[in-house]
Image (cartoon, rainbow, N blue to C red; front, side, top):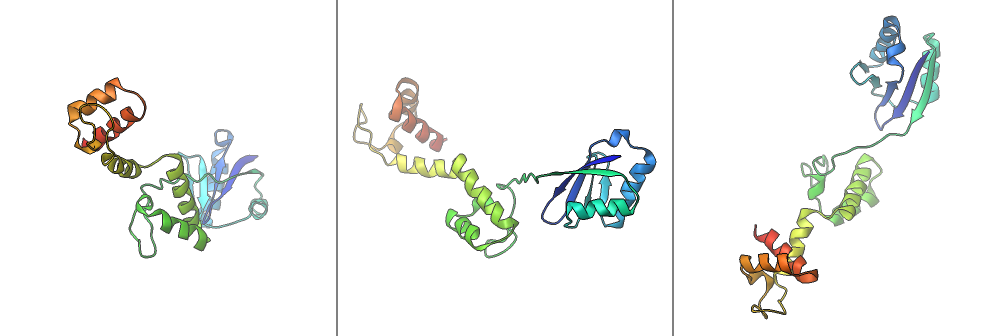
Length: 191
């Protein structure tokens, strides 16, 4: 018996062969032929085969039965692992732009106006931004902080952006709280 874990994606399905080490060469060749006849391929290194079609698990089971192959199929939920910050949008006025470089307002518009994988990508990018502030947001925050007036010490009345680097290093090393945070932000912005 062949044991498969079936996963359906938007434009293809993949079956991981759970017991590949127990199967005969003839059975593996039959699986390879099965995938090939449907424009797919068997990847021995990944111990799986993929076919570029959407198909229900029941229909797949019937196809194997018609071929006389004894198969047990379990279904797995598709895990979407996208590198959103490096993938490129391939449509619209921002075609060729990284998803991570799109404005929040445009991403929100996409989540409300698309019904595709791109909608999910926009949602994931917005979630990523909420969970981990980007360097751009940190830079914007530090630019605002550069104009904040220091309220103590020999530089009282000046902005944090005007402070010399050695003084910022001293503040970051010797003080706590908001002063330490501001000094670190300004130092990171200056370097």
